Length: 198
Image (cartoon, rainbow, N blue to C red; front, side, top):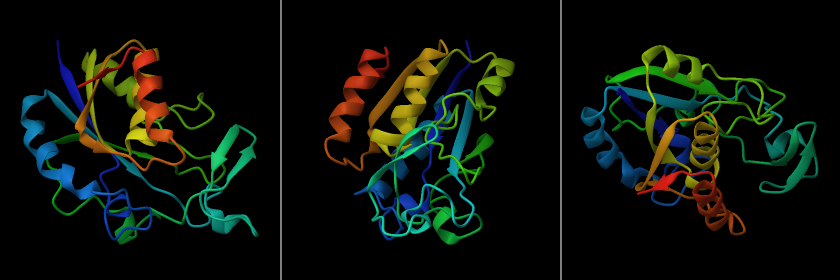
């Protein structure tokens, strides 16, 4: 049974020095690189926002980064401007192996809606195309690594479990933002969805 490694958002923007840096985000890169050869397929995701994205605090006058507002699709954390298309911030970490990648799934491109999950935008309905690709490849088991544990990894893992995949999250190869307890909540939510935390 083919297995896929899903490498989530290992980009400069989420590593030290980036616009939305995750503490120690760069320390997972060597371990991820070493893991790639163990899988039939490697798929990378990339946060790829247009300038002025609706999830940016700068798009909402008077709002500060990390405030939460209601959008038509639900609650939305307002982020610092990050991973804007074509910028160094949006590029993959320079030490990340990208040659083994079967595909790169770009997300967050619709200016009106954020996209944490590798499978759906934050309306939980609009697909990214990843599920169709995995079905075509006959993949039934996924291992997820990357950034950040409590947002994009969490949403991706829970969606994958709902879609019927056997999902493992390698906690040693993820790092969290941890906004107001979001890391503990994400771990509980993944476990409740049937995701294996390894």
